[in-house]
Image 1 (tube, one colour):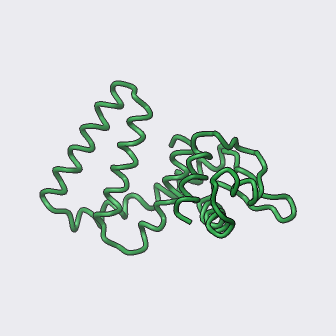
Image 2: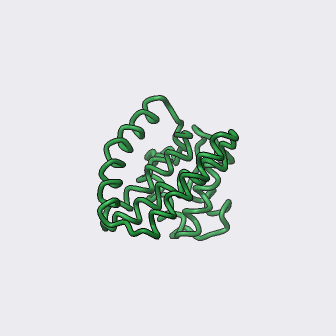
Length: 155
């Protein structure tokens, strides 16, 4: 199911599957060359992340981004990130501080060079690293929806 999830998610984020387009499970099976069970599990996961919506008797729709969605995502991140940073700061080692500094330096360089795509990769890596440092079991589960939204909306 991980392969199906990653494959479908990539098609959504690359805009191969356009926002607002309708699909069904069979079409996704054909697109991924995978069976119904892994695709069904991937659909469930993508729905939880907010990338798709399952409409009874209509099919699966790729969610359209909207200002409301972007603002909701930012509000969720603003509520979560200070706490993640505080927890991580209590547990961080000197070696991990060096890694954070490298990530910040790289992101700053890319931002100054206006390399948006490369910056987005480093930014996601930075936020993922902080989540890993805080060592709380459940916060990384929230990473999926927040990072998917970041990729989709460019926040």
